[in-house]
Amino acid sequence: KEMVNLQNIRYMFGLCPSLTSLPSRLFWYNTNLTNAERFLGYYETYYGNNYCSAVRSLPTELFGYNTNDISITFYQNRNLESIPSDLFANFPNKTDFSEMFYQCNKLTAIPSNLFANNNKSYNFRRCFMYCTALTTIGENVFGDINRSIDGNATTELFYGCTGLASLPSALLGGFKRVSTFTSTFRDCTNLTSLPADLFPTNSQRVHLINTFENCSKITDLPDNLFASMPYLTGLWGTFCNCASLTRIKSTLFANNAYLETLGCSNSNNNQMTGNWASYESDNWGAFAKCTALTTLQAGLFDNNPLLQRMDWCFQGDYNLLSLPNDMFKYNTELQYLCYTFGGCTGLTSLPADFLKYSDNI
Image (cartoon, rainbow, N blue to C red; front, side, top):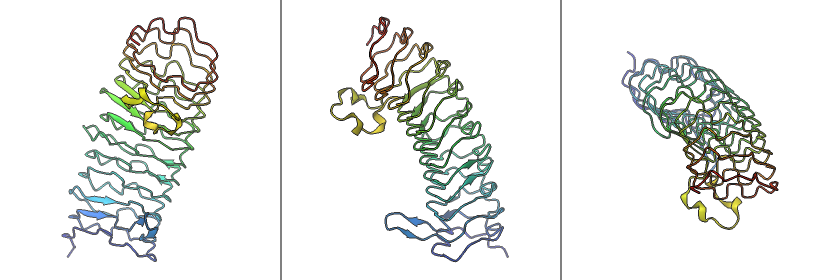
């Protein structure tokens, strides 16, 4: 008789250093499982102890159909190198995938459709954070998550994935109701380009906070990267320290009529003193420390009539040599330009009518 009542396999194979593989359908008949947390063990960072099994890859059809909202992670599994595309296919009611593969630093690829059957999921926070060997992401990984979900759903999703050089088309396309993309690709230091359709079609207010911070090899941005999010409201530190970014196209915010801020998220930043470099990145503007920028295209903010603040927006862009005429002509609601061009040591002059239309500053 099948062991259908098995519920908890937490840490089941921890400290099994000679266990190198698992058979297919190992848990196929255990349809009442509720807890499979770190069942392959984990690496304890604080003490440096490796409690992982030696399993490098998982078989297909590992788990049977399970209607529970099962708790399962491969958190800090330092040996896991590959996973099958059907790993979560039989968990239709699983809701939380946060920290699922956190610091699995030998995982090299995410298969297509990995979460495509998990449309009740609401949280992918830190799901692949610090997967430093990750180089390949398949198509339609997240499926269509068309529901109201946790505001932290994509927070630090790929943070510190230093092996990623590119992203697939429509990677975040399923997150249609996410309101905040925080540090989603932060510290992806080998990322060189972004797909034009990276973000979902989203009809609600959206904020991008440190989303691509320290992506120091990105050289250019797609013309209409944010076109699918007409209610994009704020960017804080979004491209901070993207030190290879050489150009911001004039059409980048052309479809974002509700954009309000490109400045820092800390309202007290207007009073900052001392060494600017010592402040946390959350305090920086959207394009701070983009040191390869030499000029800004005319018309960049022409379609953003509600823009109110640009604190620290271009702070530290020391190779910025010139600014366009009528840069803020259509930004009549602009109020805050604190430190906006602070540290732009290459600037030698300003257009004659630079602030002519900005009565509210």
